[in-house]
Image: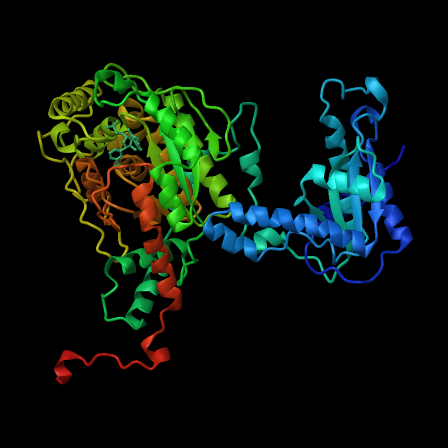
Length: 615
Ligand SMILES: O=C(O)c1ccc[n+]([C@@H]2O[C@H](COP(=O)([O-])O)[C@@H](O)[C@H]2O)c1
Ligand SMILES: Cc1cc2nc[nH]c2cc1C
């Protein structure tokens, strides 16, 4: 028996932590054969399916061949860069993805899917286990190399088939082999403390707790919503906001001249806790899609299938959201949380369906408590995924035929406004449909006990609008005024009259705030979701910027109640994230101004005289 010795565990963990995927810093020093042999021997001890040991190691030293292969990788790099949204492409331009020429050794690790014949234990049920086994060998190699002070970089910027074909032609690699890894190997001038992509801000590490599910899927050590609310409670925007306000007084613009742009800058600095705040790019719009049981009540002339059809349009790049996202260099992600139809997998689609549409809110709760929680969690997880993937600005979007009815009901429930005040014309409806829609909203509010206490008057005064200096007013400012039933139990109100996209958007808004990532809010659907989120965690609104004001009356009420001043007011009523996307350059400019605009001192610009001094 091979017993381990004291200290082995610590040593193993040290090596695991110190392993890096190395793309920079390779040096010329040759790798001696004994070292290389130990590294390959470590790879060869890896576990494999049915003990089939499907790997081979092709050691490439020829600089000429390596240069040729580097050319293949470069072509793939160019194609990838061309596929990226503008801000991502800028970030990518500064990244190294391979060191094929610089590293003195290339090791190609192959998989022979035929090794061992027909009866390889386990591979008959799972053919991919052969390649998985080879990945285990690569990991062994990587760790052993680290213990030898050798850097390893795994290059995946290859079309695997093209690489296999080239190796077949050039060095006789058999055609039935698959290439699992091209590894750049050699001595390096040092090992970084953190992954290169993390240091470059391209992506972040996920906390282990998010990845561990206990017994039931989605059951984590701490509930994601509780964890999110606890993180939001920690936000203190005062120091960053104060620093930004102070800096604004010294910037070479007349005092107050930056108007609402200054307010956005203060907000960004408050959230980040520093001034200047980080540049809020790259940006991504998450378009949450869902269908609505209340559609059956004739609240919109559009058939429900349009939700599915528009999702297809987003995914093929043909919608307004795609045009606007391309204009501002943002990525588009569609999140299916409740579309009635089954959707085919597609790049850009996050399949997070909780159920196929909600129920009719006029006769029963639109969602169960469990469905609401699942959709809120889907929103939190979407925010987490997009932030971990390196996005620094999130943008909300929505798609759901009939969702302006659910939005109106939510806004009425949270602000205390009447059905008449909140019900708008959505996609553009005639007077008869508008009257029916208003009655439907009133009926739903009454059925769920979410109606106004004193007819026609909001129970709590709307909060004063954002002063333009990033100080959101308290949500329910009139102390002693009765809280609406919705504010007392936001998730119940959401379940009663909301949509799956509202629930997911509420989670998304909270998830972003918890990660101190700013979010630009789109129209009435996001506004309604923000009311739910703010009722759960008032300080979350420090992370939110109202991108625009839509023509839906409920949106104006929601923004007033949230104390948010819209960046733009263009008479839009598209949804999808369009209005918020147009505000992205405004948000970026606010951050850039704090970073780049010179102070009076630095630029040698004379400040204005005080009034008493006279001319
Ligand atoms: O963003 C807004 O304020 C907005 C205003 C009016 C309509 N919409 C969009 O129109 C759809 C819902 O409209 P409706 O009339 O079917 O309730 C939905 O997909 C929304 O994204 C969005
Ligand atoms: C065509 C169309 C596009 C939309 N985008 C968001 N909601 C929409 C509703 C309709 C009907």
